[in-house]
Every structure is written in C-alpha cells, then in structure tokens.
Image 1 (tube, rainbow, N blue to C red):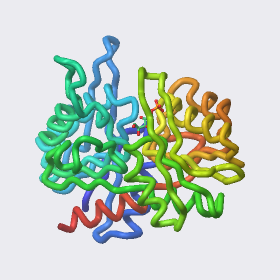
Image 2: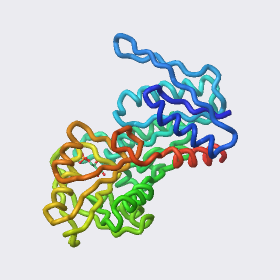
Image 3: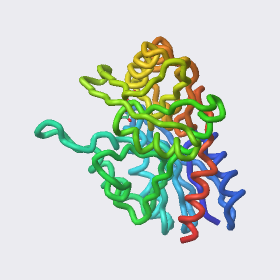
Length: 300
Ligand code: R5P
C-alpha cells in the first residue's frame, strides 16, 4: 500500500490529499507523519516509519523553505535506506524558483542548485504553478525522472468568473501572462497584462496596458504575492484609472509582513488563493489536482 508521508504542521492539507487520493486511486494510500524532535541547539532528529512500502510520497509545501529543505534532505535518503523504492515530493509551493539567473557577477542561481538537490533526493516532483520564467520546463529546473507542473490558473479563473462575472483578468507583469491566459481561456474572461519594473524587494512600478478599465470589475491574477507590492501598485493604478472593483486571485498566498494591509490600502477588495500556503484567503483546494497527478504518476 503506497504511503503518504507528511509533517505534523501540514496535517490538514495532507489529510485532504489522502482523502482525494483514496477517492481517485486504487490501491488505497495510507498516511503517516515524520516525527520531529528539535535538540536544544536547533538541530532536528527525525523518525520515519521503519518499514515504508516501495512507493512513498512526501508532502511538503516549501513556503518558509530553509528549514524544510534540511528536513527533506534528511528524510528522503533515510526513506530510501529504510526500503522506499520510488520517492515523490509533493510540494504545492516550490521555493527558490525566482532566482533563475545571476544578475550580478557571483550571484548564486538558487533555482539551479535547489533543483539539483531535490533531483538527487527524489524520483518524482509534483508542484503547482512553479515560477518558471527564463527556464521553460520544470524538468529543466528540477531534473527528476517525473516532473509534473500543475496549474491552478483555470480553477482561479473559474472562481473569478463566478464571483465577478465579466471581469477583466489582469496579470501585473509579463511573467504572469502564462497564468492569466490559461485562466482567461478556462473561464471565458477577457485578459490583459501590465508591465512591471522592480527596483527592490518592496519597490516596484507597474504600468497598465492600454485598455479601458473605467467602470469595470478587474481581477488581478498572479502565481504569487509575497510582499504584496506588485499587486498593490497594480491595484492603485487600476483604481486611479476608474476600475469599479479590484480583487485578487493568486495561487500562492505567501503574504509576508504587511502584504495584505498594503494590498487593501491600495484598493483591493477580496483576495482568493489556493491552499498551497495556508491562509485565511484560501478559496481553492488543490487536493483533487495533486491527487490526480500523484495517482497517475504512481501508476506509471
Ligand atoms: C514575480 O514575478 C511573481 O510572479 C510575483 O509577481 C512577485 O513575486 C510578487 O512579489 P511581491 O508580492 O513581493 O511584489
């Protein structure tokens, strides 16, 4: 019986994934948790089920990633030593994908190195809307035998169409075009893409496309919001141009610090996200999407 292995701080999404797997897959999956003890000096002691089956999937969404990467780099080879033959990583949010080029001499291309670590540890990876910009495919960024990049954009598009019928879907920068187009096609909504210049972590400028938004409902759609400044600048520009409402749909609600407050202060109404990162704005459950991909991958 294949095993889904999770960490206690992600029990709820792991349970949802288990339920979706067992609605979709035969043979049924079981769920167990990695037991963690933190030593006084900060190091981890991990304990896995001592006799795992051949097929094991580790569930770990990689927001706040640094400690989690260490956990994975300990747990994955240990699972193999204990008997796992094929090891999956189910990481709804995949970290370090935005650092995909060296912009100054000596700058570390984190995407490449984190990708190589994960590929050395796992046989398969399932993730959602990874931030692939200068790299075309997930397998290039994380060269595992089975690399599955799923998209929540159609689900977010459908939600936007249901909550704001006839809305304009706006991508706040060129990189968002891929998700906005998918969402627009799936939901039958008109789309447009803005231009962004980033000058620092919290300093961005957004230039709206030449499209009349006066009196229209607009939904800003992106793969993620982190500091919320990209969304906030786009929302402020849309409000200044006369948009009737501005709501936000993102796959990954990283929302660090005052992100939500900054977006609301800029005129954002509602915020909808997937449950890749637990947050009060979660409105789309990813479990059925993840379960379908994992069941198909495990059957292959
Ligand atoms: C990058 O292009 C991403 O798609 C997001 O637009 C970006 O990471 C958002 O960052 P922040 O919320 O910090 O502006």
